[in-house]
Amino acid sequence: VPDIAFVNEKFMPLGQATVHVEDRGFQFADGVYEAVRTYHGRPFALDEHLARLDLSLAGIKLVAPLSRSELAGIVHEGIRLAGYRESVVYIQITRGVAPRHRRFPTNTKPTVVLTFRECPPVSDTPLGKAIRIVTLDDFRWGWCHIKSVALLASVLAYEQAHAAGADDAVFVEPDGTVTESTAGNLFVVKESRVRTPPLGPKLLAGITRGKFIEAARSIGLTCDELPVTRDDLYAADEVCLTSTTVELVAVKSVDNRPVGGDKAGPVTTRMFQQFRKVHAGA
Ligand code: PDD
Image (cartoon, rainbow, N blue to C red; front, top):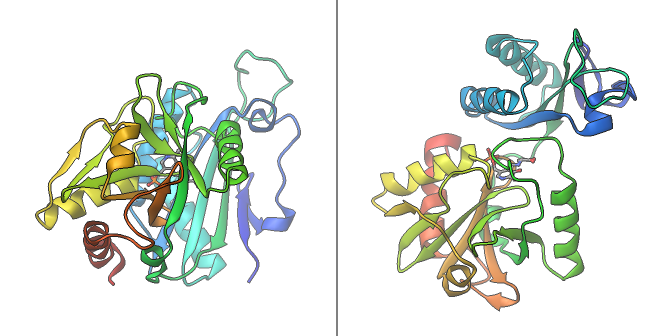
């Protein structure tokens, strides 16, 4: 089965899907997106993703060309057409095609693009594959709570992490607090207490983050939404990152200092198992 896309109101093979060169997404990264995954073929937390998409759209003053239920319908239809066991769906909405000018165009229809790709079925690998991270001063724009398609800083940070022999980077604010990674939220465990940075404009309100907070609390763990510093990371018993696509990945070193072990630690593991039990039927 080929990957498929939905562009200009039609489904087509991904390889045939194109947007205009004057699309503002291409010219200015003037757009927002969502990534949704399935469990057992059903989109996971779709309502929450579509609600966050509305917040992102409002954040860039873009009026959605489709209602939430119309978008949900396209998501379900695409998943069905693609026919994968599990899929990741990207939804991208840009301010549409217009002559290149910074002013918002008037009477331009936003471009809606969805892509449907296969994603590996649920397995236990996340617990066994810990990664190395580095801390980087946050050089992204100030509105990280908006899920903007402007991911250049994220791309450069990710590249910088790899150049330094690591797998990902987490961002440090001028006040010394650490917010999130290039594409996921951050959790630390110290003396069995779980902590994740509080929501605000410097990080995305991850859907997975919310589910992990719930999972932790539901099994009796303390999970605080409080600032995390670089030193907290260095001193942590366990560190992990969460996102739709990876679910959870354990961290084994921060700036070359070992934290936790080569695999997810005991508290991370319990959180992860609870998350899977509730959401992935595992
Ligand atoms: N990224 N922070 C950033 C900067 C992200 O890009 C993401 C997700 C998250 C986690 O959000 P969620 O749990 O809702 O997926 C946090 C997606 C997966 C991506 O860019 O592909």
